[in-house]
Amino acid sequence: MFRVKHSFRNADPAQSGSGATPPAAPVIDVQTQINQALAAQQADFAAQLEKATGHKDIGALTEAQLKAQGKLQELADAKAAEATSYKSKFEQAAIGNALLSAASEAKDADLVKDLLAGKAAVDEHGVVTIDGKPVADAVKALLDAKPFLAKAQGDTGSGAPTTTNGGKTLTRAAFDQLSPVERSTHINTGGTVI
Image (cartoon, rainbow, N blue to C red; front, side, top):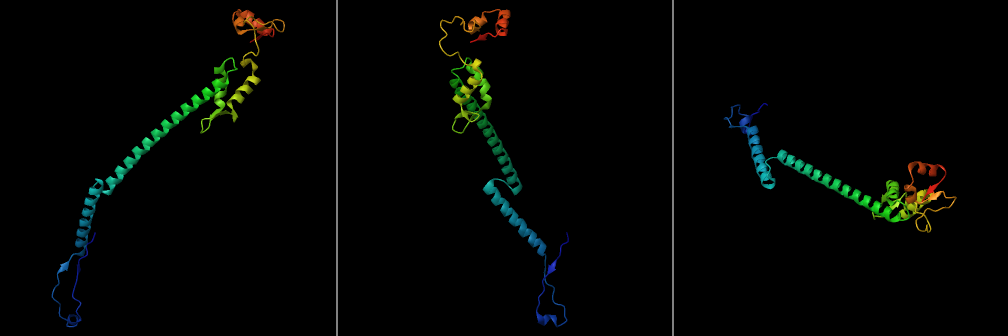
């Protein structure tokens, strides 16, 4: 960079017309004075910045703020993941409880729960619905559509095999006592198990 030295001269009109060379004025280096003033101002700013923030320059302050923001973002992400996990656990528990309590008429309430849990949703108030219907209605619709999942209606007596329809209906306990061949024959001849 080139430095320009400026010299200030007296602009007195009486001296300019005489033709004589005016006495030499001291030479002032303006650029040096500007640089010194800027250096003093920067040092003052750095001292105030360090006093206020603990950092010596803007770069260090910016870097510290970015690190802090990164840590805050990591913390926020961790808390969001934790909240999502708890929400998922709550929804699963609410769905399971609602289905198990509504499936009291089913032979296997856990099976009904497993069949319907994938269609269940929990709203912001904790109310469980299945395909937009109340849980009890959805369970009843499933048991109506698949009657083999429902408990037998009415009194079956002492637990002995029932003999309706020519002896083709057996209780689960009686069916379980049959050999595999007898079970297959019972099912193939149109027998039912209740």
